[in-house]
Length: 195
Image (cartoon, helix red, strand yellow):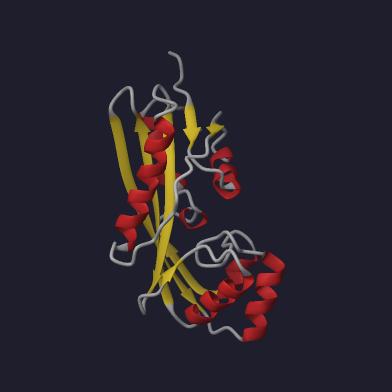
């Protein structure tokens, strides 16, 4: 049986590295989707909608392939929507606002095959509890880890782990961007061998 082609609709090096962990052959496609974050849309719904938009955009080019679209949103318990900071100043502001708070991250995936008319969408929730952070700690962290393209301004897989009192999730990989446990289950269901 011929294995289906797999496309990751993302230019994120973090997500590419994650998908590589599953030892699958895949191609990368830039879906060129503008990631807008309207506050009127609940964060989990927004993550799923953005993931689906990316998968749909890529499937227009790769109709016969299985396409993975993904996105992540996050909100603090005080209602602050966390985004990719892009600048050190924004990263500092986000981490300052998060200290001592809990935040929920929604890591969403859409797996789609246009020719088979199949689309599966889901998200995995991770709760993080930030510890109290001094301004000096925040600045030092940003300089060392450079988390400017990471939702919430940290890299959990790197030095960012030092910013927390606790991390709670059914899938420890979800916070990086791709929830690999549930994604592996879905990929097995379409005939891919994982592992």
